[in-house]
Amino acid sequence: MLRYSVRVLPVPTLLAGALGAATLLGLVHLRPAQLLQAAGLAVAAVGATASRLFDEPAAALVDTLPRPLRWRTVARLLPTGLLALLWVIGASVVDTQGVGRPDVLRLQGVGTILAAAAVTTVLRRRGQPVPGLAVASTILLVTTFLVLLNPFDRFLPFFPYGPSGDWAASRWLWAVIVAVAAAALATSCLEGIRWRFTGHPSVHPNTRG
Image 1 (cartoon, rainbow, N blue to C red):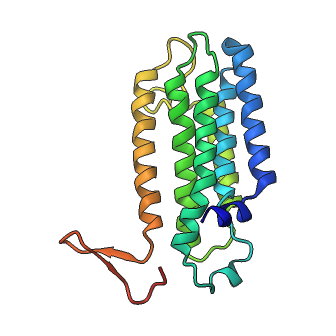
Image 2: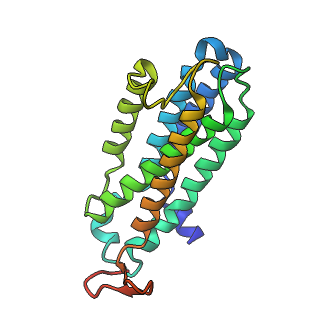
């Protein structure tokens, strides 16, 4: 599985996303009071990158091979986990000097990565070979809109800013997003398996893997 993960890894995409996010977090570290919004843009960058990790340009061929989609999806989770780990490290190192909360920043990135992975794997399951570009574009547009305009700050503080921001509510909001996205991703990885009311798995006869 590790060999497969390395072979299908889109290195340029991963490096571009990681470097872009690192650059934006570096700006926050240097001038947090003026450039804290760059942290939200970094969240968009890692989310867009995660969605591209599940594309399968050769799906017409690969989907006929013995390795089922579920196995290949789990293999692609390895670089996704690496991206999430790098985000957690970067978000922990950034000094927001009291105008931001590193714990919320960590949740924002991890939640966006998990949500991107969940949506992309569901679309792959439905037969779309390269859904990552559309998902990445949506993440960039929606997240940038929320970061720059913050229209739902009173009720849904996705990206609060400054000491007066509702960081506690944002922490809970992103914790829910992480939990829901993780559950959706786990369900997607269990493609082909149906759980009976007894709690025992059974494989549907019309699915491979």
